[in-house]
Length: 59
Image (cartoon, rainbow, N blue to C red; front, side, top):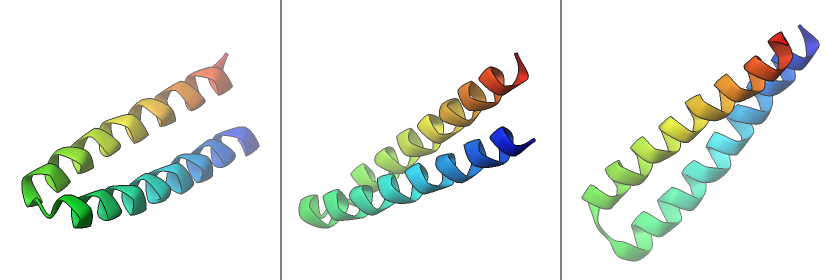
């Protein structure tokens, strides 16, 4: 239970950091379409990261 909690926290931290980087890139490029695309990729990565983290914990 402890490791699963940590996995969620790590996933959230990484997602927040990626979202900040995404915002910076979007501001530099000044394109809304790219922001949406990066947002979707970040969300997918966060879901994959969470799945991998919980899968390792379940073993």
